[in-house]
Image (cartoon, rainbow, N blue to C red):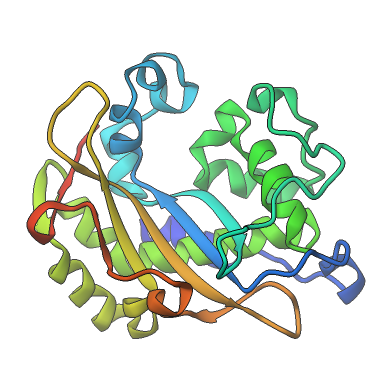
Length: 248
């Protein structure tokens, strides 16, 4: 996992100021980084588990190498009226692959495919046109920033999540890992557990992290405490403060 993360952290997003900005974005207050745990994501929905290419490619080795995968990076507002569909493909209807391809450079596209398994189902198209188009960043800068933040999260939490695969772990232990590995992320992180639609035990399916909007670049800046983003607690639906880490 260290080699994978090292490669991500070396991702070149050395863009000119003109290339970094895409357009004047709508007003928003902060960024929400959404990270998935693929086994729980696939188990949540029987239809998804059966038909998603992403879920069909899931392996235990892949999960242990990279426990957290990229879902999205969302411009967010404190009033919860989050901006969406700001680009030319500004509609929610249709499947992900019906949307226009994202204008990415080859290096960023290749790296994104390694950290966002949902690209097998065109997730990057949906994320770009719904969320990225509202950031004011170019596609390379937007996804490059998301990839670097995901790598940071895996460095801080990946080892604990991989070790707990197939078992429960207290959220306080995950928070202790953050406090030791990357203290700024501790109060910026929320753990979300979901119960599969067909029934069963709640599983840790998503980890959300909040980041300030950098006034200089328009991209994500310093970690933002979840309470400053209007979230009351770091535990979102995990019974008794414990999270079950599903295995493939």
